[in-house]
Length: 268
Image (cartoon, rainbow, N blue to C red; front, side):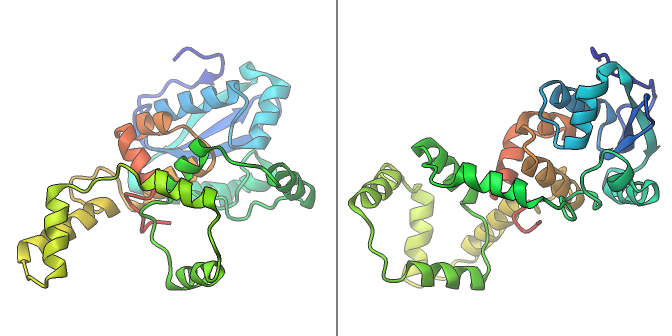
């Protein structure tokens, strides 16, 4: 790896487990889990060099002490499915969220991260009155498409929209979004048979198999729920789909489907 941060040589660099990034100046550490130590080190260095690490505390220390003051080390090696579990144990043992550079006390999520009123207000003021571009709206729509919603959520949305009249601009935008959408012949046939009440066992099996694939439960999938939670956490933190795909050894389209909610939507 081409980097100034020291990476302790290890025959386990391609394995999964728990690692730490230690500040050799003051001994403070960031602890994390990875499915591939080598790829995770590269991801961290890239983010820190660009000033967009998800850990603001680690980024601030990196900026203050310099890249050469940090070392990436393997703490323990384990199975992929156990990596987040051991990360949590280490975070608790080392009290890393309070004395180290970890921003969250819960491994694999942002639970426990408290934002100041000033931080919340700054974010709100930036978004207040902001108009989204058509491209931004389209991306949000694609991300939300296919995500399951609770009955309570659907009820609240229906109540909030009841009685509302769309403006001409909204009607035009909705028309443009729907324009050009075409269903495949197979989809049309299935819908037609469902409407007229024809029972076709093979159709039901096809739908079930499709739902399994879209939910991320197909047997051929390389991922498991723990890994998907880690992926969703990193997507939430703003990490690039390309970097995540490389680290987990899957295609970028696989990560994009998880991001859009079209795969593994049942995993929070």
